[in-house]
Length: 493
Image (cartoon, rainbow, N blue to C red; front, side, top):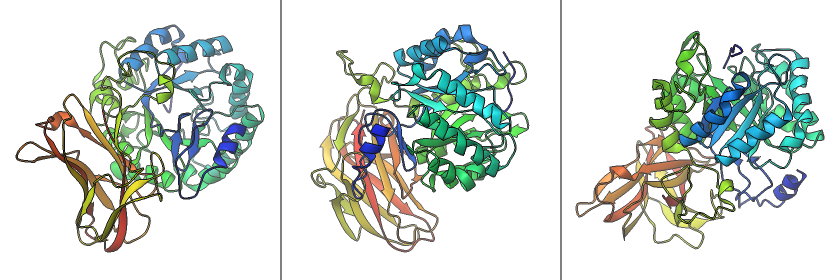
């Protein structure tokens, strides 16, 4: 939030084995960045869906708040800490307890130092760096469950150059101290000047010898005030192959409204993580940003209900990291924080096209090793684009999906051809004797690491009599010529 009151080596060895045509991310000791995605230690993409918690001002309430946040289905909690320079310092024992609490509740912990908020002083940034080094014994060995957000909203001025210079000296200090965690860097301008990332993000990323740094925009009235601004701010980061999260956002702020619907919807389309501000404790001036009226989460505010239960909110989009499944000997195979049950892969296209076919395609479908979100292969078809042309990749086969709740697939288009204003896609299903069509709604897809489409099966009238599943691609009015579309990792929960 823009203003608060008190209240690695192993990774480098792994990355050397990547093949140009097989972008499957290999397992590592912890979270790691590849292109504009973050991957967990199991090698799976991880999209943060969670909440900020102001621990440093409400230290005695964390034991209640963190389990309550987990109960929403969140997969991440961003925890406010203090290095002692402005607020009461959180010592190493406190941090150890917080990390244990997060881990017990299947939450990835993003830790941040809040004392530096809005400061342009390099000494404030260095104080945060020294804090991480001082408590590194609590952090090293937890690279798979802890991410370090170096300094909350350091550099208040809307100036990218000096912001970048600060982080270019800070990141090597952390690496030299042995901290190999994924690092998060907030943009300049109290987190609301994404141009700093657009202009200098690559320089900051290159300052990390482990290439394990991602960026954060805080979307309030300036960075998140309208749809065009939000989309541009996100696109201008991820189109540089830099990884991004929305580290904070609200539904309004001091100087204006925030378009929270676009933040949630466009983040889902682009696989960008987000962490809503904040669970509770914003005081009378910013009480509208409280997600819950009580620390235990029994009484969500309207803002909290939107984030947790609304369209593209936590319950609809959050997936717990599979790192927490290791050693789980429960007998039902379900994640306790994800009541939809375990995910089952239906089609991964590792051995062929698995009987899928294409409609209005100029070539294919084939199984190829040009791109994959899971394994080494995906399904590909060439398509001839024209004004709002429609193209399909689908499978006609009888299936019984009784008891299932979500169908997912990851799709992309090639980075060649004239796609005009882009290509949209929707995941669809036909069921029953009349082949009733249900889809997830059309979303714009990308040409880089893919867009995950999710179909809510509660809308399908006859789940025990599925006739066809597939992806419907639609070109824009100003597209032309040939390109290719891809589908991978079709799963059901």
